[in-house]
Length: 115
Image (cartoon, rainbow, N blue to C red; front, top):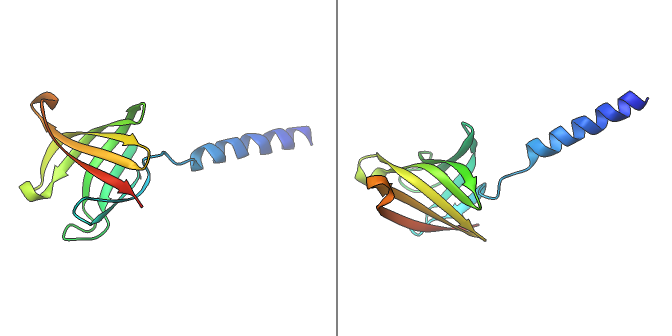
């Protein structure tokens, strides 16, 4: 019985950890008025359009880099699907997502708001 209780506790700890969401996950409103969903994928997080002309397309992949910061890539479909180095900064219910060139010297950002 003691082993069963220990096993039960261990499984509940593993399951609880696996179900814990990262603060970046969820649905976000973009400045364009379209929405994006951020969900776990490929060892990080995928940013996918929920509606609008690019509905269903992934426009970013990010991994946590600590302190509410994320790093990865973003895709700009207004530039023919060009991919840029990307970064994100989560502050409360605002996520600032940037696409950068020249090693981060020039970046274009937009603020997403959690829905």
